[in-house]
Figure 1 (tube, helix red, strand yellow):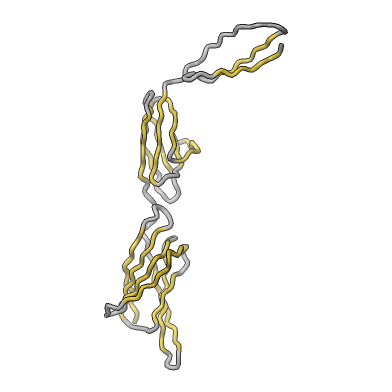
Figure 2 (figure 1 turned 45 degrees about the vertical axis):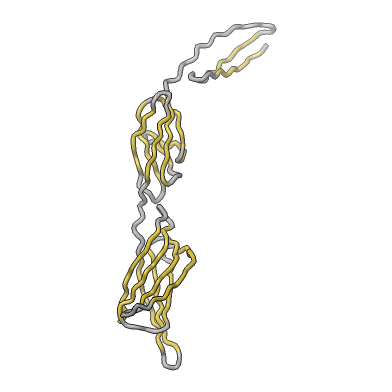
Length: 210
């Protein structure tokens, strides 16, 4: 005897719970009408890069790409959101007993890498020989690999290796040359973005010293 809660599950039907009360030694036959689930299909959502939060019909699913949903048939507005990338929206269709796969290439919102160049002149030695220090202030977080310095009116160059140094925005990189030379200095700067699609960059810049 007692009260019992019975859970009934069947593929293609809504899970159903019923409560049965039984007296001592009582036997009971219970008929339960199960409600059929609407026809559904699988929808797989991918993105490049992975890790975008998936919104369906404007609602946050709390899932991230890649993920597969089992959805009632019909069209769905899918929106993918990822920090430092443009929100990307498209229509995905759920088709009965099929698995549809959708992929989105996300476009990052970061600008091209650029840097502000400044310098200072430091006098040293008996003859007050001037050394030049160059400073580079980048517009975003980067990985800095090399700065190649080209002297004015010369094919001479000097390569400074930074061994994949990670620089936060606002932190200066520095190279120096032991002699002040007036004219146009050229710099080739090689590295990689730390945000967005983490793309490689190669800057070719000029800086004039008078």
